[in-house]
Image (tube, rainbow, N blue to C red; front, side, top):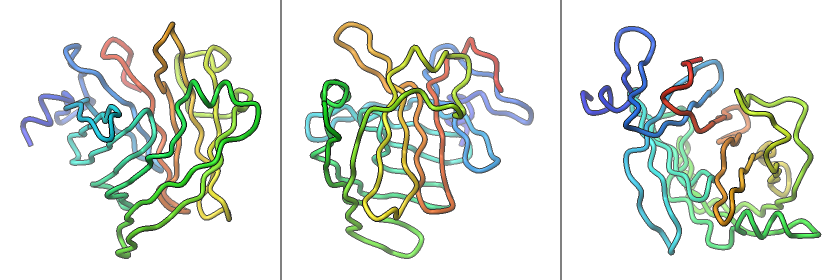
Length: 191
């Protein structure tokens, strides 16, 4: 637990972020937490970012999409998304793109849940939890699940040269448990 406190700077009061680490600011319901980038793995040739909070939550992101969440009321374990289009491909696409995600969900022991997804570019939304960044400076996408099993996910992507980074994302883990995250630097005020 001390390792997580050192990473996130979380003590008895508000967090003090260590500039030696990269962070995500996340909200889940009314709760706010800061997660520190603990490691970068690889899966199917893609970069997997593993983020840790002092509250024992762990988020795994593959190219900005949730690839695993544990330590929250709803959890996604063993998420497979091999057909997910790149953000550059999605930005160039004239038509929406379709692919399949497979995930294991807790609680409830639901294994092999298949989601048919549609990804399309959208205008910057009127309402999001994005802070300190002008929404119109980013490229926005919406990802819907066929059948409306989950509310749509949204992503805000920043492109600089050959590099694309998901700066902000919001996605529901269940019909009632949604998470929003944003890349956050240690020099930004804790909000």
